[in-house]
Image (cartoon, rainbow, N blue to C red; front, side):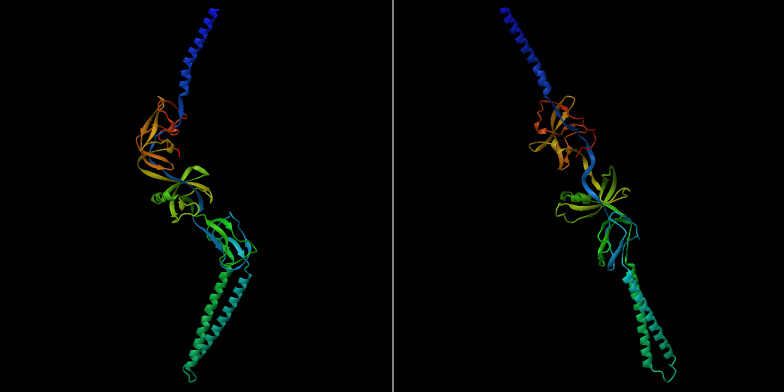
Length: 369
């Protein structure tokens, strides 16, 4: 009986000893903490600002008839491409044809009066050497001939105006472009100058963006940008600042900026979404890190630098050149390629062991925004 009790006690002690030996190993495995990190990359230039914009026409004009009338034909709809000289719409020309005929009749009558007045003046001028010649009568007939000549000129001008008005019954496209809006329908009576369609010229495209008020100076200073379209985001085209609004939009509080595209692609269409990027030349090489990588203890910012081989992290003070919405720009304190922890920096215990959660980016690759 005593032997059995001794054997049971021995087994219990052995189990406790084995448990004590295995517990530190499990705890040690749990102490290895995964962290996110990315390499330090010092850059000489960077994307200073990235904005979303819309492709628009540099020139967009409403087209209107120069005379009043009822529209009897409209040959284009919204989205149609038009050529310079193409007839877009037509109003009823009958009244203007009648005005041309009336002006032609008035001109014929005035020319007849001029012919008669000149004939009378010539006949009376031949009597200058006779006793029946009276200077006052001659002056009167000369004045009548001059009045008749003026009437002919006025009738000709009236005919020209009537002919022009008849020509204005056709609404002609003044340049190649795309119809962006239709503002009147056949059967509608329109007044002179009332817009019928709106046409965006295809000779130039630009990108319109809203600039935050704290980046207006940067836009003005650079003046150039690169534009990529969502239809083909891997390609970029140069653009130049053409216009910057002097006042902010009341709703968005941003300043409208228009950048003219140089040699846009053939597939670029009005209304496409574009991304405009302004590249900034840095005064000295800087490294951009996420704001989440900065550990602020006292007045000196710092970052946790990781040694992946040893599984250790070291708190390293850094000089921050600027804090911006796209990250913290580091001036000094780090070297190219060092791994910096970018998440959970306020909960790091340097006594712990660490491992990388994901494969780090290649050295020299620009940090993600």
